[in-house]
Amino acid sequence: MKLIYENERGKIVMNGGGSKGFNITQIRGISLPECDVEAVRYPYMAGQVVTRVTPMERTITISADVRDDNKKELSRAMNVFSAPGTISITSCGKTKKINVRCVNFEPNKSKGAYIPFTVQFCADCPYFEDIYDTAVYIAKREGKLASAFVLGCVFSVRVLKNLVINYGDVSVEPVFEISSVDGAVCPQGICIKNNKNGNEILLNTDVLAGETITVDIKNRKIKSNKRGNLISCLAQDTAISRFSIDVGVSEIEILTPEISGKLSVKCRYNNSYMSAVV
Image (tube, helix red, strand yellow):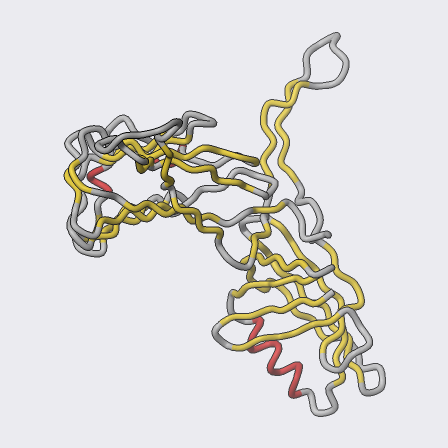
């Protein structure tokens, strides 16, 4: 196992043991997170009925040691740990990351040239993620030729629809980037629809030439590289927080009735996992 804690102040690399530098002797908190459970119990009925299960913040505790003759490594580690950062864990060829902040760092009594220590991190969001986002273009061409053809027929048609696969353990909130090279007039708006769960977002806006509209579901933001904040373009009966991509395969479709012009739409998301144990 290899663990890296990194932020703007530097990087601390910890290995599973048997190497120079920081070596992990024990790690806890990278399996399933604890859950806050609400339940109802009824008289004369065995057991309980669970009404809500919410994964809580994750606490990761690492016991390790470092060969540090002049204590420069421990001083450097404390400086890096003092700012929020990202933990990346690599095991069996797979790497997952999680955003954390250090809540405790405690060096112990030296054992020869080695100094044991314990460091504890808190992740407000308990889910691990892939190192890089997954990007899918919501567009494809459907062939229209099923037999012999004559001049004047339509060879293919461009459809703003594609399959998106969530390989993680929980639903994710994606980012959509809507752009147009020459501009597009959308009299009935731009509707982003998840045909699997029925979630949809309606934007009452056109797209300018060279403009990119970013719909950030997770951070509840809609902005343009030319017009700035466009949250006011969100239809009144649309709740941006309700849109998500479920685990597995989902079909995402962009609906633009009576559109004049062409759109390009990219969906970006990061698979989220309940644990980093491979």
